[in-house]
Image 1 (cartoon, rainbow, N blue to C red):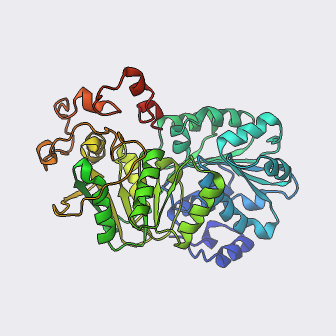
Image 2: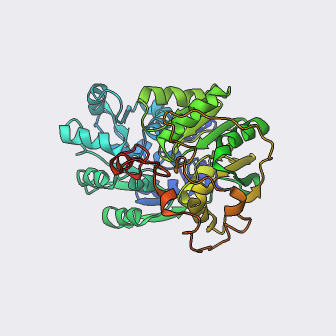
Image 3: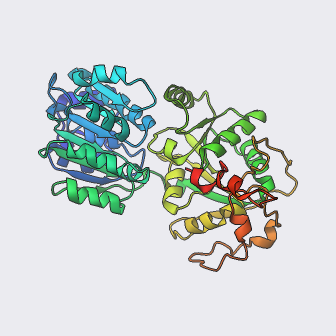
Amino acid sequence: MKSFKELGLSKKILGILEEMRFTSPTEIQEKAIPPSLEGKDIVGSSATGSGKTLAFTLGIIEKLEKGKGPQLLVLTPTRELACQITKVIRNLTKQYALKVTEVYGGVSISPQIYNIPKSEIIVGTPGRILDHLERKTLDLFDLKFLVLDEADRMSDMGFLPDVKKIISQCPIKRQTSLFSATISSDVNYITKKYMKNPEFISAESYVDPSKLIQYYYDVPKNLKFSSIVYLLKKEKSKLIMIFCNTRMNSDSLTLNLKRYGFEAEAIHGGLAQNKRSRLMEGFHKGEIHILVCTDVAARGLDIKGISHVYNYDIPKTSDEYIHRIGRTARAGKEGLAISIVTDNDYENFRNVMRDDSLKIERKEIPGNIEKLTPRFSNEGFSNGRHGRGDRRNTSQRFSSGRFRRGDRRDTSRRFSSNSRRPGGSSRGRDHRTQRNSRFSKRRRY
């Protein structure tokens, strides 16, 4: 591996990196900095926590001119990631007297309107950036550099139309860098339409597979909450991330964990930005032990010292599963990824297990664990998405061979049309009530 000096960086930047205690480049930095210095467009495939911010910033800093308005625009999918990137760039550029402004929704727009014209670097989310462009409070006429970070997640969240509108207002003559964990069809479309002969680079996972242990537990629905409480008490852990598929599940799980004495907080897109910022600061400092989150809120966050990742709800794809468990077992440290599977999760878990690269061992929850009764705001809401319906015995519907690779057996016997309905068994509910239920598919985003 090369040193920062061998990558062609100036003495001033090398001094800044030394002050920030960066001793050697990561793989993505080693591969991205040289073409960035040469002015080439870059498409980088790399996971969260691999050092992408330095990778796209170090080759640009000394090309920015003080007092010339916005010259670098960094687009990110979430507010937390925008804040995180802004903090790193400010530390890198403080000796150059360059001003960095973060631009995202959920906060007052007035300070942003005031700061944008005075800034050389803008870091923001597509929605608010587009808002400023439409208000004429952001001018990209002098933009030299465009960075799309977590491009696949921006596409997944429906930001692609906004991103295209933003790019259309950027000068044709610019340097564009795109970073993405996966190169989806949408990401590939962006590279072909908006980038000039980009150099494709990739970095291996920042997670050490030899240090990451993966388990799953198959449990009845009525023991799902009891099981995670049992595991949280049993496992010796530092910082913990628990993933849920919806905001509602995140909030409900958090409230119930607090009832049983756990220092847990939920983070998702429904929270005000100031509260999200306070929660993240508390988690970084170790004041909050457990962070219960959705995929959208957690994407791109680089948090050190996470020892355990729990999947309380199973993600729909193996890619999402890999993104989740990639929060632990970093930088040579050990980590544990634990999934709690009920019959509601079988379809998703089969999708995850079709990835041959994943080695997930089955474990058993003791039969004598304390049975806890979680409280929920609606009596029809259960730990999974099926409500009160389908209380079949787990051992009958789930065998050790259920998740064999490539298993495509018909699931109609295990998942009846009645149990698939968002409200569970109807119990006399009329059609309108089921359609407008806050647990329906239309509201599960």
